[in-house]
Structure formats: C-alpha cells, structure tokens
Image (cartoon, rainbow, N blue to C red; front, side, top):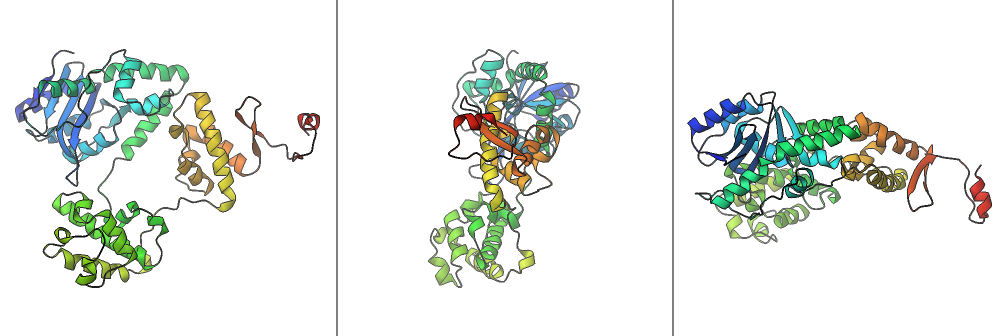
Length: 399
C-alpha cells in the first residue's frame, strides 16, 4: 500500500475524512494507554482503505471529525475490536455502523482468538514485523519502527477480511459471523455504573448482609472519584482496602487508618471523611437500593447437565472447527438452564445447534454416550437403565 500518511493537523484530518467518506470498507485500529487514567488515552488511530494507509496522531488533533466516517454505511474491518470500539466511542462519540471483526470471524473457522500476526500469516501469507508490545505510544516524535509497526496493524486487514469471508461463505457460516459482529457493536463498554462497581470485587458473590451495602457504597464512591480525577479506581482506593472495608467497616478515622492496604497517601484532604461517609451510607443502605450481581448459578438439579453439556459443546466445537467460546460458554449453558430470556442459546443459529439439544438433555429426552472411539454422541434417550452386571451382548442389544 505504499508509505503510510501521517495525519497531524486538523486540515489533514478533514482531507482524510473526505477521502474515507465514500469508502465501501476501511480497516481501523487504535493505539492507546489506560494504565494511569480512568478512560483509555488514545495516542494513534490507524486507517487503511483502497487509497492507502493513514496514521492519525491523536496527540496532535481532535478525533471528533472521524465520527463522520464511522457513522457512514461503510464497513469497518478491525481485529479484536472490543477495546478499539471503546476508545473510539470516548474519542469520537461514535462507533462504526457496520463491523467485521477478523478475530471473531476467524473463530468460526476454528481459530481460537488468533493474534493479528497469526491471522495475517494464515489468510494473507504475510509475516508482520515484530514490534515492542510495551512501546509508549504517547511519546513524540514516533520512531520509524513505531510507524511501520502501526501501519502493519491495518495494512493487510482488508485482504484478510476477503479471504475469511470467502471461507465462511463456503461453510455456510458467514451470517453467524456477521451476527456476532453486530452483537459486538451493541456491547461497547459504556462508563461503569458506580452502583455496580462492587461486582468486580474478588468474592463479591460471597458477601452477605451489611457487607454488601458497604461494598456497593464504597466502590461507588471510589468509581465516581476515579472518574472525576481521571485515575484508575485502584489509585483512589486499593482493591485490598476495599475488600477489607467491606468485611470490617471502620467507624472512625482511627479505625480507617488501620485498614489493611490503606496508607496516608490514600487519605489526604477530605478523602478520609468522604470514605467514612460512604461506609455509613452503606451500613444503612435499604434493601431495595442494593444492586445485586446477576445470578450465575443454576438449580442444583441442573448442575450435572451443565457439566455434561460443556463436555459435549467442547467436542462439537472440535468437530465443527469453531472456537468453543463462540458456540457456548459455561455461563451461556447456565443462563439457558435457569430460563434466562436473554440467554444467547435461545435464539438464532445457536438455538438450533446448541440450545435445543441441551434442553433435551436437561429434560431427560436425550442422553450423552461414548461413541466407542473416545468421543461423545448426543442421542435420543432409550429410557432403559444399564445394569452394571449386564453382559456386553445385552448392553449392545439395546431396548
């Protein structure tokens, strides 16, 4: 595609946007850091289209005009796009109207979360240059090696997309991949709801009684303060301290100072007072205000079905050459068996391929058996229990 174009001014970005507006499809990627900020800090946006490759210096220009391209009908092609979508949403207040995620799509061809280098070599026959994964993209000027590495992230995506799409069409799975990419667009991470931040705590589901209210209130305070200061939540209050406070709520500053994981740098200024207020609020939190994590467990009677179904799904994925997590995760199986109307297995291609067979298994209308070659087969249940003392000939005869 030739040398990449570096876009480092508003006029240059406006010109690029005009060129991209008419593109049927374009490849896109981002380079960002989030180690020391609440929101991801984008440093570079790479774009490839029929006209070439452009590298947009997000440290030098406002990315807002790029929203005009994202909201057009053109298809965005990206690899492992979930975090890129979040970055674009924060930087441009928009995400692509259409998406083809090459990593997701390759999962329907048997590749389990392939790296970009693996994917490009497999579908394009090109080895990407190696780069420093820990490079600092916010430092300027960018080196020649950094620019080459960044350009390579998008230079071959359109060609890879074409090959993957053709193979998916040949297997009758293109609509499956397209549906999954559409779903990915609906899951773009919005800002954390402060009242649910405590769900991310270690062992959050094991908390009981007032500890839940304290965890919710203090974690919400931490989330709001982190957002206001643009800092990672752990910088405001370490995870260990949050857990300690939930299990043993401090009543005054003396007790607060003894909390494990806290030191003076976390309690400067009014922070200690605010934290104690959050604890007091949590201790008095009324039951209707408590935000509980979504249920994940199923009835004890169905737990064997989850285990059996998970084994069958693993084999089915191997036979069909599909990434098993795309077929059904353990959480998907649990959601199906507890009757969750939003479960992935109750609609679309997953319902026919996985959902209905698992329902029959759980209802006792189907059974899993070894196929004699080390594999599993899901078949109609005979209803005839096998005696441990029955001779092989009797077992072979069936009902």
